[in-house]
Length: 350
Image 1 (cartoon, rainbow, N blue to C red):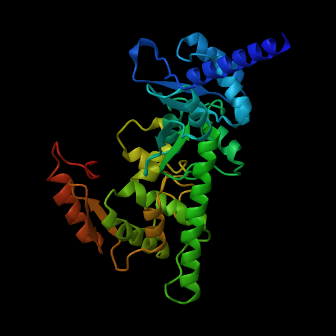
Image 2: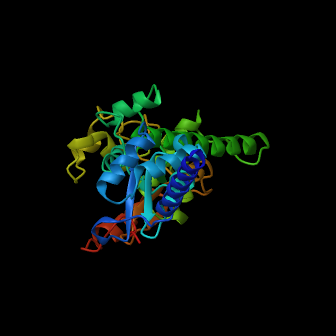
Image 3: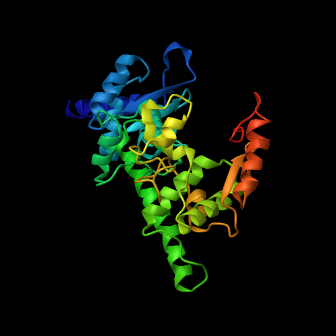
């Protein structure tokens, strides 16, 4: 009798194991005949909660079998937050491997060179699956989040940043800030090394931050890579000669929301605008845009020459002049006589 009971337990045990193996080898059941499903795991969620939710949703054959597998493999605590795409032919036993070792779905947000911090924040605010942990998301709250004692304008690096579902806006802002610090310091240290070796002449910057301010102006003045060092050279010579920079983008930045698309004489005469480089000498108080490495490099490696002026030719490039008389002739040629519908001061984006 005892042997029969043992045999019965063995048969039941073997049967259970066989059933479990069959379930583990069963393909994931997908609702609505979709080719795959997206599994979203949030921070703090347990595998037990998720497994029963998936079973109730109708695509996981057995939550208990999955949890038994996880316990045997000690992998329940190894699941990662994020979004994971589960293909239709995925077996139940393969699901844990996908959740613990697979790559979660990635999203991207891009900060564009030459745009303002507010533009970058607007992109960040519209980014899907991103936790908006800075509220409200504006230049003041970003300044506080980065621990800056100055405006945050210019302090995030323009680039494309990859993130996963559940990541925070602050994590991307801090990543972009660290990147800017690294790029600026790298370019500044290279400049100081050349200066120490007498390879270059000293530039009129008191700090790397002032080079960043100049880089932001260069970034706004031209989209032509070949012109960046030439424009930087013009502004450097003006600083060295105690001339005003007289650059429209700084005035426009200072006007903020008051700028309605048309720069007027009253704007150029306004001394109360600290960014009005037509009235105030030297650099503006802060950067006016996000500057990339190329613009920073140009600000620290300006082209040599005698040019002190430039004017947009209408095709995205500029005409450079060494004298005011030549500049005035260029203005009449390119901006007065050639004004037309296709005139533009920046190149067409590709």
